[in-house]
Amino acid sequence: MAPLKFHLRRALQSLGSLCSHPKKIVTEETPEEESHEESLKMVCGAFYIPKDDPLNPRGDDAYFVSKEKQAIGVADGVGSWAAARGVDAGEYARELMINASAAVHQQPDGVADVKSVLNKAFLNTNAKGSSTACIGMLGNDNILRFVNVGHCGFMIFRANTVAYQSPIQQHSFNSKGCDRPYSGVETSVAVVAGDIVVLGTDGLSDNVNPADIEDVLNRETLEGVNPMELALSIANLAWSNSLDRTRDRPFATATLSVGPRHVERRIDDITVVVAHIVPQNCMQYI
Image 1: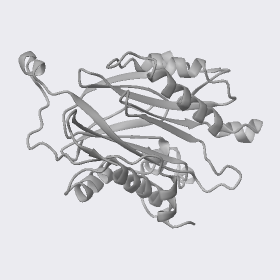
Image 2: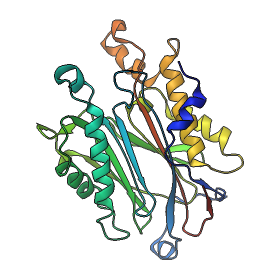
Image 3: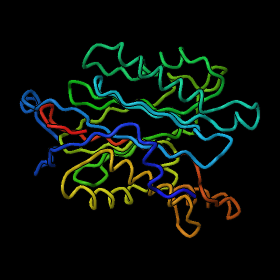
Image 4: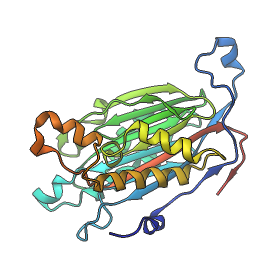
């Protein structure tokens, strides 16, 4: 097994923030206060660890980050296509995310119609296969909107404590049938400066609890927030947990109801996107 530092070479984007957390977190505001609230943006970093498979070194996950359009997304190609039909499930996920990135750039500035983005990406994806997907966009109204089909998902942490966790669907969609983008669950969450959004595929959610991420945030944000470093730490924690037979993980705990023989390690591709919510005028570094 390659050392953790090996995975640094797979990092595609690294953005950090020089802004500190606000001393006061506001969860509800009056209309008068909302009219004076500052405009926010996402500062993002992402990290991907494909499972160790010489026959499929790129794995089945994919993601995109758009700084210009304030959009993020992840997809997880359904691996059963490889066994049943010899199809590279990752190809479908990668093409879907490329098309999603293109679709967000066709939207007017400040508009966050995530279901339209997913639908356009779906219609323009021609590869064989199927995929789960979760796409999020931050609008000019400081509302973070997500659409989710399948077992990808996101969490929002406020003051390093989980404030929201998205529901998980056990579905996917593809060009031949199954679910369509309109079946995706749409979620809208008002965010404030200092919030940290963690988006991931099931390689994350199957192996890491919200409390585990809280520990990472409490440990690594004492001197500021670096989304890339957080994405790296959270992804590596999920990878390490997936190899630990002695640790109770979300996937293993969930399968206990089916019977002990179904409890297993959940080794999978792991994709993590971290977005730090900051004021528009916040300084950044790369």
